[in-house]
Amino acid sequence: MTRMTTKDTEATRIDPCSARSVDLEAGDELVIIDPEGQQVSDLVAFARDDTREYLSSGRSIDYASRLWLTTGDLLYSNRSRPMFEIIEDTCGRHDFTLTPCSKDTFSIIYGETEGRPGCEGNLASALAPYGIGVDQVPIAFNVFMHVAVDAGTGRITVEPPLSKAGDHVRLRALMPMVAAMTACSAGQSNNFRYKPIDFRVERAARENK
Amino acid sequence: MTRMTTKDTEATRIDPCSARSVDLEAGDELVIIDPEGQQVSDLVAFARDDTREYLSSGRSIDYASRLWLTTGDLLYSNRSRPMFEIIEDTCGRHDFTLTPCSKDTFSIIYGETEGRPGCEGNLASALAPYGIGVDQVPIAFNVFMHVAVDAGTGRITVEPPLSKAGDHVRLRALMPMVAAMTACSAGQSNNFRYKPIDFRVERAARENK
Image (cartoon, rainbow over all chains, first blue to last red; front, side, top):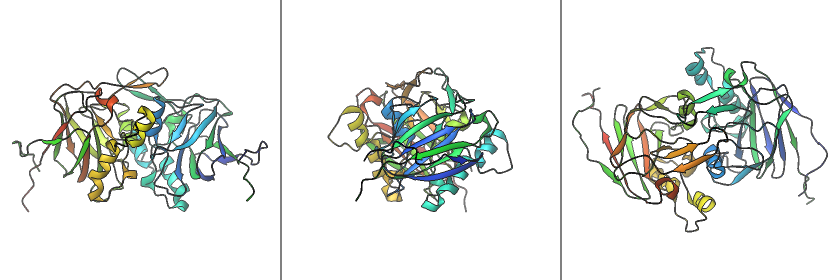
């Protein structure tokens, strides 16, 4: 299987405060783009043949021995199988410790009462056609999210993303899966300017059968 | 509901490289004890009336704004409901970012081939009577686990626990649940001396009905 060298799809826009899902085959490349800068995208993924297998922050961080993953790192499933390889990363700083923002997050952290679904609710809606429920939405690979850590106290602070307009991450899929991504709804994560995210899938050429 | 002041149960021993499960009611206090020092216990918990609700590292870290939780902190479920309050902590340093060690962890990190089940397998066995499968074992609250972080690079290192003989953590249960704990099987976590863990449940007095 060799990857096509031509761009065979246009970028798809994820509108502010929403999510999209996409099917990926092994060898496909998923490019997640921050078109305007300083916007976070929460990424989750599930093995398509058994959605109990999912992208696992705890496994990935453990095997990399690093909280922040970038080019060359593998993202593992809960079953310790590689799901993605990060093959390009023009930003270099992402988070993999926090759960997607939710209605309850907004209530607990911001005192919001309007009941916005947040990334969790948006991911659950995008994944519903695959039979994946909201309780299965795990800690996401929070692309472009900038979480600073105080190594003495463990205190974490959510800072504006370091991503500039056009920054992107390219992930090679290593198994058949469904992925879902958001344009994040949490003000803290995007400096309180809710913006879109773009993504593109570059399909691997399939062998003739 | 008031808690009994007498110790109404003796400590239960979790043998080295094994796990135990226990039912907890709201108000019960779970005391996890390191009897010899420098031993880790991976703790997971599930709401007993719906085991899709589980103890969530991502939620708990987010709401505390701290990687390392201690006395006064709440441990939340994936549904953002408080499951435990830490009401006593004589050690003060625990991890909440890494998944329980597993057969695959030992293979990937240590090159082990003997197929030990690790904390993940031991937790799954302890939780099987509740219909909770291995894929539902999430990132654990890794009691006494000492993970150091480099705030510049995000590099993490697993250090010997800071716990001394007799150190313990006391958790108040805030909903009916099943919890499971291990005496951790990972050499890195316990300075390559596999030791037991003790725990005790101090039951809240039930109102007469």
